[in-house]
Figure 1 (cartoon, rainbow, N blue to C red):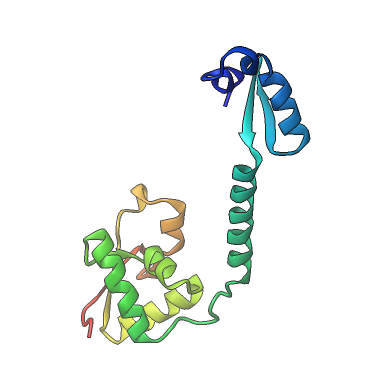
Figure 2: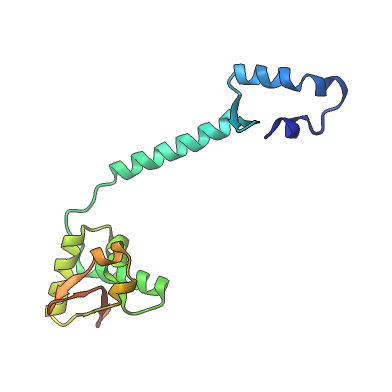
Length: 157
């Protein structure tokens, strides 16, 4: 809130003591004062603390969440494939989206999909390289000298 926002609704003697009250709350660490240009803003310290605690908890959770050493079994891959397919609305899904859904290492994911392709269970498709982001391109599987960006499972059972 700006000083004008804090003064709004205050009348008489109280309005004259807004600066003193803000200074006291800053000293007591109940409010944090920020400046941007010539304007000064105050933020309730508990709101900032809650945001910082939440962000730190998310960071710790990400650090402590181990990456699985290998691709889960075929049923788990097919479940993830169905989720991505429903979310995107297409049978041909980007390999990188499937990998993100599983949380598996990309090299393991590619090896699994190549084996599924060899067995006739998965069809790899080219996709559009020119419109793809670096993230999508990272999931490309080289087949017949061309990068394939998409996968479709024939049998989802």
